[in-house]
Structures are given as structure tokens and as C-alpha cells.
Image (cartoon, rainbow, N blue to C red; front, side, top):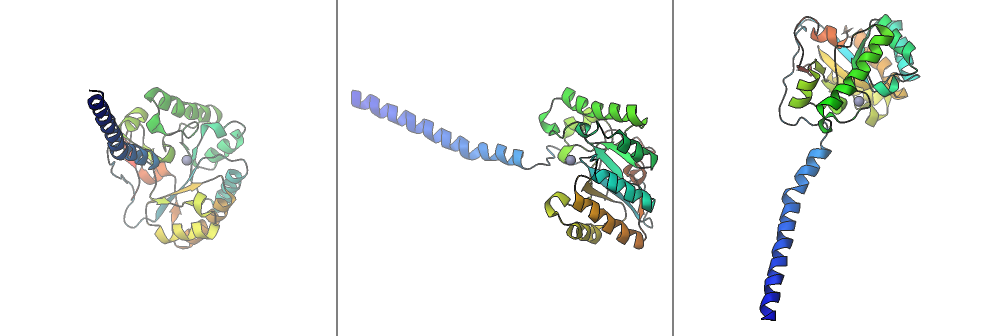
Length: 253
Ligand SMILES: [Zn+2]
């Protein structure tokens, strides 16, 4: 009798063990893969919209994320001003205090300020109310200091799903060329990558928090001006003010 019970117990534990192994194989890797693969587009592919670029235009939008940075954003802005060209700065709320002069200069020089959230948290993990707070903080700060009403939003890591899109209900502007400046760390590498991939209507992702990005910006601007490109803001490139762009996701071409 004892022998039979023991056998049943052993069979029971073997079953439990196998269920555990099966769950480990089929469930865990999926959830791990999902969390590692940021940026994530969870459930929809959002098409690219590019409403204002004509075939014979040579328009390009430089975009700088994660600033403002006292040293590098200032240097980039001074350089852009010296060339009389504009760019778009997707700013973080945590970097705004103490940098009012930079925000004011962005607006004065015709650059566009975009909203890149308060502190770069992954929106896919936030509640709707938390996403709204992240966006509102930057909108309100920039409006108070500069009078500029932010139109475009770039979500941290470019993460967009249906919930994020509907919660923000504004144009979400992603990019068509990722400079990967943070990984390359070399001005010439960064510039070469951009220059060899650029096309009419490109939106280029850079980060105004590195010296090598500042140096790369100079190389890119010099070369593309020589090639006849015109530098515009994302709103100008995409015609955000001319269409009802709320809730649309833009990647350009
Ligand atoms: Zn960012």
C-alpha cells in the first residue's frame, strides 16, 4: 500500500515538473523576447504619412532627442543659427529646468520643440493617466517659458501601440534614419551613415547630448547643403498644421 502511494506521489511530482518545464519553454521566452525587443509596436503597424514632400523637393528634418543639454544643445543651436537652418528638438521634461534660455533660443531661431516625455519611461508600461502626465509636464513647461505650443510628440524608444496613440491623440513623429549616434560614438561614422541613406523627406534621429553628435551634425549639414538639401522642421516637412494629424503616426518615407 505504502509502495503504491509513493508511486502515485512520484508520478504526481513528475507531472508537476513537466508542466513547469513546458511553461518555462513556451511562456517565458515569449514574454522575455517581448520585453527585450524595444522599440515595440505591439499590435498594429502604423503606416507612414508624408503629406508635403513633392518629388522634386530636397527636404530633410534633423531631429535631436533627449536634451536639452546645456553644452551640446547650445553648440548645435549656435551652429544651426550660423548656417541659418532649423531642426526639431524632442525635449525631456527632466532636462528643462535651468535650460529656459535654450528653449527660448530654439523658438527664436525658428526651430521646433517636440515632446519626448517627462523622463523617458516606456509608455507601454504606463497607465493612460501616467502617459498624459508625462506629456502635459513638457507641454506646460515649454508653453510657460516660450509661449510655444508643442504639436509633435516622439514617444520614448519610438514605442507606439493603439493605446498610446489614442491617449496622446496628437501627431507622433518617429524617424526614417536612425543615426545610432549613441552606439557609433564617432562623428564620421555617424555622418557617413546618414549621408549614404538620406533621401528627400528623410527624418533623421540624433541625440543632442553628445559631443560626437555635434561634430557629426556639422559634417552632415555641410555635405547635404552642398547637395542642395533644405533643412526644415518636422511640422514643415509633414505639414502637421495643414492636416488633421491628431492620432497619426509619422515615420516619413
Ligand atoms: Zn529618447
